[in-house]
Image (cartoon, rainbow, N blue to C red):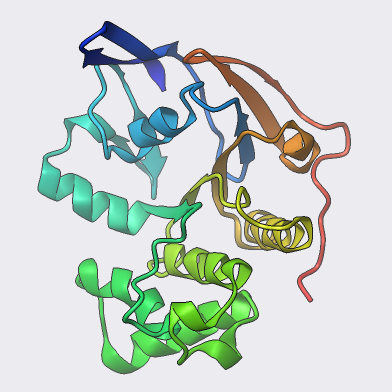
Length: 237
């Protein structure tokens, strides 16, 4: 992120959600972006994913040996690039309630034009196995718990094997035990599958679990620290 700024025009005047953010995220990092409500966390993610337009600056993502200036892509190019490069995990899960879990995971493959009936369903089942929900594959989202829905959302984000995952408060509505399991999944993806994860959260107590974390305050990103021993590397059960 190079001098990224985002200003919203409101009836009360201009509101600066991000103020000249400069930040480099390295491949294989589990980066935590920690800040209070209203600090600019969601806007920060929206700039990375391109779902909102920046006011000034540039966001460049290197994936598969290619540098992409996210905000210089056309809408069609951006949609295709995002589907293949980014997996997005929301706090509210955003699963489609009328589709089974396996159908929810298959959906991004279909949207990116890579759907193959047998192979895509096999991959979806492998991803549900990764998050320990293969036995629930044919249930609807409303038939499982919130923590299980979040794990399905992670599986869906991995559907097209993107190198980068971004997560917006993914543990914010979960109890501590379930949130701990979600972190286990993330750590497995970073350490064993080479994913890069950027996660925003309001919870300062999570800082030791990231490989690096930064603070976002009033639209400005303040320097981060790395835990002395790194995050706990835990084997998936």
